[in-house]
Image 1 (cartoon, one colour):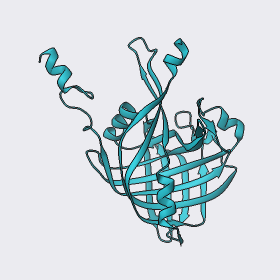
Image 2 (cartoon, helix red, strand yellow):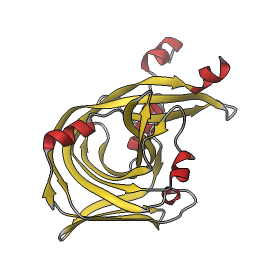
Image 3 (cartoon, helix red, strand yellow):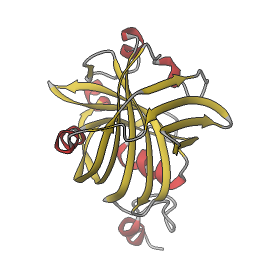
Length: 249
């Protein structure tokens, strides 16, 4: 393979058999359970990177089933998103995400900087309740319950919340272990079709784990719960802050 051929074909590793296809990625029947809870403001301040600013001491804990993801297949995610502002504009910072898909981990981390880690999340209907669990190598880290399709929500209002930008801290190391890329990335979901949305009673338990430290943002009070069924696309993002450039200038 010539150098020109390498440059023409390279976009992900491994070179001759990339772990994922090029974006955009389309998700059909993507199912969210999102439980918003109040947490310790000091704990929140320790994990939100400047120049992002937490809006309130609130965290959104998510379980997501993705049964039909173009190029990535079927998998499940679980993690925490923190409401923030960036230069006065509202959005959500993805603080932690755990999933059971190599392609999902590689594409999310390498392309946009999603903080994805291999674990075993599950989301299922058990009689009258949705139950989400997250295990890290056999150790229970999170358990959530929510009443199944308990009370319908306005679909247009839910679609508006999904249109808010997301923020990610993308870090790629140099060969010496230092950061070669350290950027704040903003991304949007597009082509959103909300097929159903509900709210209802909910509970959330988080348990300490050294490698899945979701409990470091403790649950002080469950505020709300949302169950969403939607189609959407993630096409790419933009760099809105370069930490290495800002440090050098």
